[in-house]
Length: 289
Image 1 (spheres, rainbow, N blue to C red):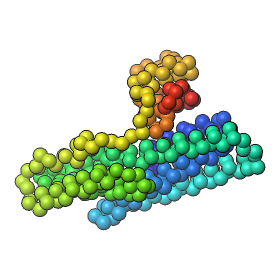
Image 2: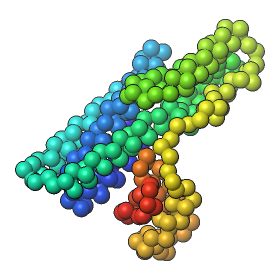
Image 3: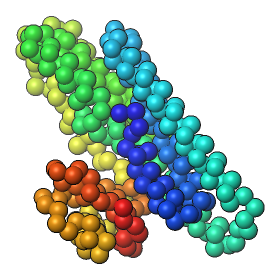
């Protein structure tokens, strides 16, 4: 997935300020989307491409190259749109209240980006390259009884997870992620050592990578509201009630974005039905799509 979820979520705020005609904040969010691509999508793609190329996975490398072009296309789109939005308010008088609003929005965007930077390495074994590539390659190796290959694949996966911590949150300047990187590197070395012993069965620690994060406290921007409370607030909004009227088996989930909650409503028949943006401090529903 070339465009990661951070950029996709930024596009909700882009939509909000496009509809309201708030070009100053619109420009900021286009820039935020571009920043997510630059600091998340680009390094993730480069890490994957380097691995595929180095290990002879030609089709996967070609796919990563195609994704790199898509990322650059989206990056240029958001940079251009930010410039266009800025041109629409050039020359406007900026009063103190307007300055305050923009400063607050800039701070919110910082929280938003720092929330998304560790998102993929934190969930490495749940989303992205591990389930789509490593897990499938492992299944093939297990079917052949090639346990050395399984261990090497898991070692490569752990090393890649460490590389994501190195190239994304740490490269951006976030602190305290060194321990995450180092634990996955140590785990990768351990698996490589086990592979050299040519085992005839998989050791029990082969899946420890999926549990390492549980031993570490995931750093998140705190919210005064709990997800369950936010879900109820969103469901109670009159606009959401109108949209969901007559819909069956609706599922809802809330994700905190560092300063606000995004609540998605969906069902099997229609997919995404509605989205609510809920303020992280006041728990007020800011907008509904």
